[in-house]
Image (cartoon, rainbow, N blue to C red):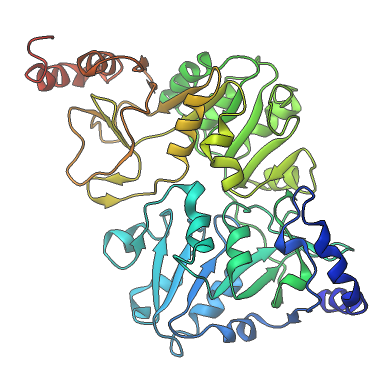
Length: 462
């Protein structure tokens, strides 16, 4: 099938130079300009033969992780030495990080997922702390030059354009910068609108697959998450532009917004929770100043219902992450409500979101990008939402962060902190006032201990 499509473009080589002159149109970039060089349609095993020892390979992230190419590359471990693999978090098995392949592959994560958490914590894989909006700069500035990019795309349309599907984010820049582009082309990958278009002639090797996209089932929010959702929803005005993540707390918030009006979406990621609000007419994007009437996102992950929703849907535009997360862009929309989570927060407002002590758990991601952007937005609100305790009953609001833990959002950037016990508004408050506000929303069994822990620090003011 794809070989036939490639063949139809052989006669179009002469017209490719003309298309180079139209880059200035919206969403056109290097990858949308036909190169005149047609890709080879090969097997996954043949495709990865071009990867050499001591090279750096980018892997398409999240639900778009190209499983066939990953497996084929890993199976070449006996032929390869010191191949560096870089990516955002990926779903599915990260077999290249298995201890038995030490020496063949080394892994660097811009964001740590569950499949590589133990490898990072055990020192078998690396973690690069970086704002999500700045990951593309690592490729553009040749700080991390890329030899190859393994990607997962939708089939080409009649004009030869594939789509990066569910994960556009940093992948566009990675593909632009990579010396060799190897694509797994899959009819089950949603075709998405926006920056993720890539012309078939910008791909070096194509591998045909017909595999399901990774499914993430919706989490049912528990009682704690529902209470948090109600408090957060009370902070969201009609006409707000929302940024949220994926998980039970974002879903709980979205479930409380059914009676809101004229909401917009400008976020690095979303999941199934937004669909009901679109269908109810709650999300209309009509009050956004930037990308009005459009839902803006970098990547998504969810159920088949979500993938069907984004497939060829002109309402949803997937953009480069630097065109979404840059605070100078975020702030252009009014009433930006940024909703982010945390592992723990101390009584001055410092937020730990990527580690438990010195054990890396996730990553910096886009939290600071949007916390700052929302703070600068007219009527915006940067919100940290977290349960008051862990599943073991340990307080997440602490006098001092754990030794070795990383502060992702500084106390100067935090405005609102929400738990199931209420809302603490910290902006404009001094340190002892912040401590008092945060103790009020801590779990009741921990409040006395927290009070005692900080009483000495603020003995003259307490």
